[in-house]
Length: 481
Ligand code: GDG
Image 1 (cartoon, rainbow, N blue to C red):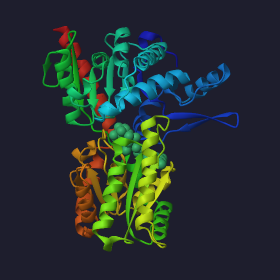
Image 2 (spheres, rainbow, N blue to C red; image 1 turned 120 degrees about the vertical axis):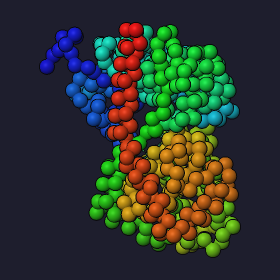
Image 3 (tube, helix red, strand yellow; image 1 turned 30 degrees about the vertical axis):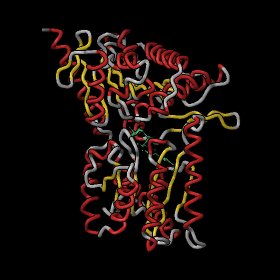
Image 4 (cartoon, protein in one colour; image 1 turned 90 degrees about the vertical axis):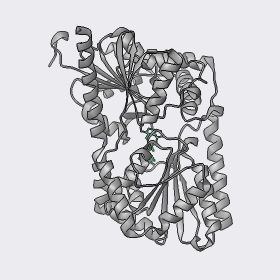
């Protein structure tokens, strides 16, 4: 049905750096591969509704106009709108500025930041390019826009300039650092002003939200009342919305016969030794080296545990064109090689290490098989892996050892929490987890399961949009006064 502009239904526009479908060129053909990520599942029910769309980069650079047209047409059938980026734009905006300035600074790694004015300009240009693509969708003032993450910090204000009263939400999936850390970025004021185009700016944790509010008041001197900032006469709210996962997907998979069988195979392959699972994207924020050191110290201090445990480390390839990531990969290779060669014997290797990406079913079987899930992020916005582990423990067994510096630690209070910078604490937590009696495991896990079940990704989407609508109504009432 075609609506004239004034009688058209309200449209929801979701925007993120990546689309929930990835395009790949293989054997001369284009393949469209859906993402299994949490965001894609959570927002699936929204963007797939008629009239709604998701705007983002499709994950490849077309080689011809024909390829571009084909991609556009195919994606349009899925309610997806591509923003095509050149190799130079990807280099400057994504790898250069997003991953070499924003990612390290927002994860408190000041010394890893590489400030390059040219990359900043490309970041600005690409944010404008996203705004142009949104404008081509002919948004209406009654529509709503939800922008995701740090690659698009300037976009809320760019959309606001063209659509003064449209509802704009922004969610940041990574931490927001204290204002004195954020201050290090030469373009910090522009970044905050970019975000302030939104009506609702949301983070995983209370601390991230407070850090953002402090940056607004300390750097820009904005008037503030509780969590509400006054920006050119408009009320802008900063709030906490901890992201959940698709609980049912992980729980149902874990209950299925095929996954249960696969989990048994995995356990048997590792001779029913205590199975410690670690799953991370290759990233220095995940504390992979620190965890390997702690595991070595466990084997050193408790020789009786040798041959009784296995640490299964899956590292998913990521950003390996950025120098810091390549170095980290080499460092992990060396640490794993060292531990396996020093402590391993013919019948037993202390670490099973894979640098790979697995299908969801294999991930699920690993979660089911694992006696312990070990998350030692040095900083993490939330960390979904630990929630997926909890959702997969359908028999309420298993122990979660969780970094207190991951956002999830604010919710999963029954996990054994550790400071990831302390090798001693991680070692002691592992020992405690290995020895934890069944009844204690059950009690703690049941509590965590309830939290992950209740605050799932659909709940997260629902309360975010409810609040955005509420804020729009409040703003209208204020203007009418
Ligand atoms: C950012 C923030 C925040 C991993 N290996 C495979 C695979 N995965 C999936 C996991 C999980 C996801 O990747 C990783 O999510 P995390 O939350 O742990 O980490 P980031 O990628 O850094 O995500 C983070 C998140 O955004 C959401 O706001 O929690 O703090 O850094 O879902 O299952 N999936 C498949 N194969 C693998 O080998 N299929």
